Image (cartoon, rainbow over all chains, first blue to last red; front, side):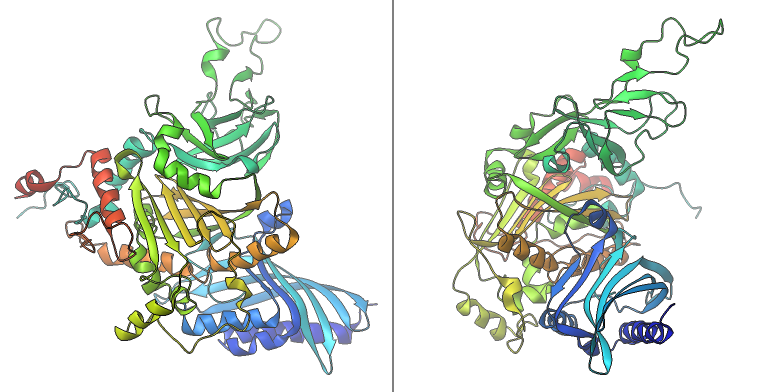
Length: 157
Length: 427
């Protein structure tokens, strides 16, 4: 039997996650993770070969906060307008407070010239843990198919 | 007045010293086609990949020399080979995988089979079948292999060339530039994977970028803010190789408190003294080279840029994709004797470079801004004058000398006129 309540909670967590990125609420993004977390964006070609080279690799919430501070204060990039679409959620319960979940994602980016393009597709491998009355990410890995990154990747996936 | 036939994209370079570059070299299909012939098919060695990517007999990787699809392989004896990925029969791509291991390569169209060196050994129905004729009696398998390139490696870096006349690879890199390659490749490496970035701008804009220490602290604010790289740092900027087309920028670690003041005094936006990292471990610099440098940026013309930024090591492959596009393939590596902690640091410092790099994400932004800015003005030129009166000053980062040397060499290689002759022709 599928635990429908748990499934609804996980879907709500995903919705919150993509809304945080798509509404440019970047300062809230690190707060969706536990302190001792992993966040990674890695091409599928490396993942398939068991090679570790990432595009972004943050171990610990402090690195996530640093990424946001750098994006806000140091880095220069074209304004990004992401729309995330997530589908195909599957999950397995590890223990009472830990769930492993997987899903597909699609990110459309719209340029200043008004053109919307498929920026990235891939899959999320997540480990989420119950922290009081909500779920947070212990690990979130975006394993992307779109190996050619167009121009640059500034905002997290 | 009637519209005349297309004029040449430009009359020549206004100056021979590489300080004035007609923008048409970034936009013209004619120039691009000439580059494919005179540079990528000409007397140069193009970087294909790392030996560590294909360690075993039969290993292969698909890549490019300029526009030409090329496969680099290791044959059953362990020797390196490279061939154009185009069946000798009817032109189909033979190898359809990015990477793999195979003793033979078959074209799917008619199953002509080649060994890992590119020699043809199998043609279905070569002798026909049951009285039906096969290939003609004069068909020579030995003459119908895949087109082979000269291939060689230097310190584990694999290069190939279409040229029969270009000097051997070690001479092409040259002793001075070879010394800097050796600085990075001083012990066996381990390949850690690659990331790819695509830019809608001309490939030479990227070469300008990696020969440009002047921009590094002004565009990449992360650099200056965290003391990785400031223009007041000790530096070593020299060019070398054929026509001075290769170069090295070394930014040497020193006491940087003194240089911070220079930015504040000039009110350059680069310096933000209020900015601190919550997790500064990303900026560790573990000494592992003779000379303690924060940055080692070394293009080996035309397809390679060797990079050490702190303890992040990358061989960047630069691939032209038409006049207005290029692809960068970042080959990350470490050393075979890295301990777990060192390997962890290299992965952490991968955040500094590549498509999402704290100190590199702006480069493609900048090259695309140039591409868009110059689109309609092919005869107009850039102004590359920084440090032009002090050509012997190689210890500064406030210089565009490497870019001028590059363009002077490029002009020679491409056979473009320069100086007064060009002005007269244009006049």
